[in-house]
Structures are given as C-alpha cells and as structure tokens.
Image 1: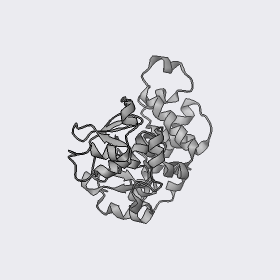
Image 2 (image 1 turned 180 degrees about the vertical axis):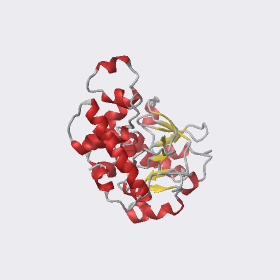
Image 3 (image 1 turned 60 degrees about the vertical axis):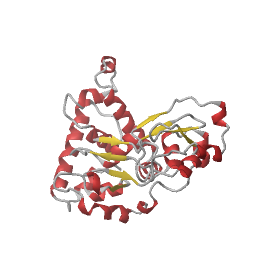
Image 4 (image 1 turned 120 degrees about the vertical axis):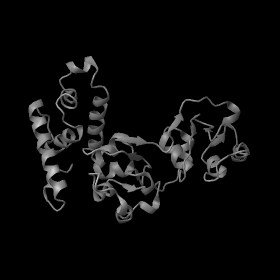
Length: 270
C-alpha cells in the first residue's frame, strides 16, 4: 500500500514575518500576480490564508507558516489548509463545513465509480471500498480517494483492508470516526506505530509489542491481527492471537472465492 497526499510536499514550520501576519485579503491576493496555475485560483488561495512565494506553485500561510506546492486538479485550498495544518487558527476560521468531494457523499455514487475497477488483479471489492468512503479515480489504475478527508491511496496489496488503511493514513477523518469509532482508530494506529518500529531492539523486550513477533517473523499481516483483536476484544497470548488471525485470513480468502458467502460478516471488523 502506498499513500498519496493531495500535496506530496509540505513544510509546516516555515517562519512568517509580522508584516505577513497583518496582510489583508487584498494584500495576499496581490502576491499572486504571476501565479502559474489555471486550475487553482488565486482568489481561493488568498481566501484560505495563503500568499504566493513566487517559487513554482508554492504558497505559504500567513499565520502558521505552512508551505505547500505541487497542487493538483480538484484541490480545495481551504480544505487542504485545515486537513494538513489543523492546529492553525486561520485554517479553522476559514474552513468550509462541507466534505472534500460533496458529489461522492452517498455510497451509491461512490460505488458507481468502480465500473472499470481492475477486479481481475485487485482483490479489494468495490462495495468494501465504497463503504470505507473511497471512490475510484479511473485515470490512476487503482487509486482511490476518500470523499470526506480527501486522502488518496493506491497500490493495494492482497491483504490490505480499506477501513484499516483509511485509519492508518488519515485517523482524523470524520467519516471514519463516525463509522468505526475512536477505539478502532486507536488500535489501528497502535499496530501501525509498532510496525514502523518493529526492528528497534528495545521494543523486543516489551511484552505488549506482539506485532514485532508476528508481522515479519511469523508472516501474519497486521490486517488480520487487528481484525482478531477487534473480534475478540481481549489480549491473547502470542500463539492464540496468531491462530485467530490465521483463521480470519482463511475465512476471508474463502469469501474472495465466493462473493455470496456469508462468512464475510464473521470476518469483518465490528
């Protein structure tokens, strides 16, 4: 699984001067006199609190100093400002209340985008992707985007679960939190953080860091470990948790061979 931000590169610690912080909307708008992009308007950027740095398509917030470039078609400056720098008071003040892609708010609209989903080579099912908030971006092979938080994910592997990947890469998504709850997100993040540090020697002495023993060394994908924890709601000994994860993986593989199989309900994260 790879993840793609709407802004692949950003710097969130740039320094703003006192003069910049005092700039009005008109002052900020005047900095865009040589703005190069036609698909992102200077007006929308200035209203979102940005000034143009005159370096490529780089802009900077006059309050938090966040610098962004590599804008893509469809990006919404106010939403992006809030999503990537949620602590910025200006971003919170100007943020729109609507979701990132209002046209994809309904499940049926998201599901309809999967007409050309590469089912033969991608194991994730359109109904599961749409349920998790994602719609398909046909021009990008297997890239999907959340209608609410705007997160883009691509290069799905066989064991990736849409809800779990959503929680790994955008835990603050309001749609995710509404549907799955904070506890689910916290558990996913705990596994994800352990995974990133699994080769750290000190963690191998931590009894609760069962991901170290499982993920690479025993070949159990974190998706199934998380599903096992979610399903049984208690801590297992290593061998018990591995057994439960492997049982869930086997059942999900059966479901993939027969999409009408009811076992999927038993294997889904509650």
